[in-house]
Image: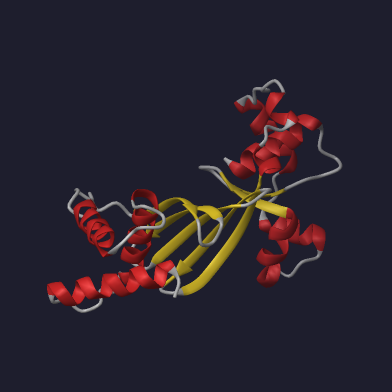
Amino acid sequence: MTKKQEIESMLIAIYLRIGIDKPQNHDEILDFVVEDVDETADPEDWHSGDVDIAFRRWMESKEEPDNDNYFKIIHQGFQKELLREEIQIHAGEYGNVFLIKTEDGFIVDVYGNGDHVNTMAIYEEDLEPSDEDNEEIVEILPSEIDEFLDEWGQTVDEVCEELGYNLIDSEELLKVNYFWYTTPVISFWIPKESSMYSEKEQMIANFLRFQ
């Protein structure tokens, strides 16, 4: 029997002793108690009293005001059994998010109601400042935006006629290479990138697209 299994048996004995069924958040309590025993008790000579104290600490931690925060940190630190550093966060009623440290960065692992939802890997090199971040910021004037829209903005009828697209099926096709930009007066389809753009025009297109 592993140490975690022994602690779980002692934890269930506490439930029986205080007259409650196994709680729905038993796994959360178990993780807290295991970590507390690992951090505070003697590594070799730990006992059921250490588990009692850890469970009391968990109860006390729940007495603090929660403020109905959407995100709640359940665990933060090194998981000895999994040999990894991680943060476990409850998100809302069903979400469970893990931030797991890797050699190259970290992984975001998301679960919902027990089912795996999504995983995203983040690499350290992606977090480093790029050369572009060190470039001088170039101001874009309102007059330059107006000139750009006059030159490159097209209505859906205009761009469909130019490309030979059917109006009914055009939206999904246009989204591949164009973006939709709306002004108080009129809306345009604008190329995301173009070999005919000047460097400043590409900057304006990026600005309009992501603002």
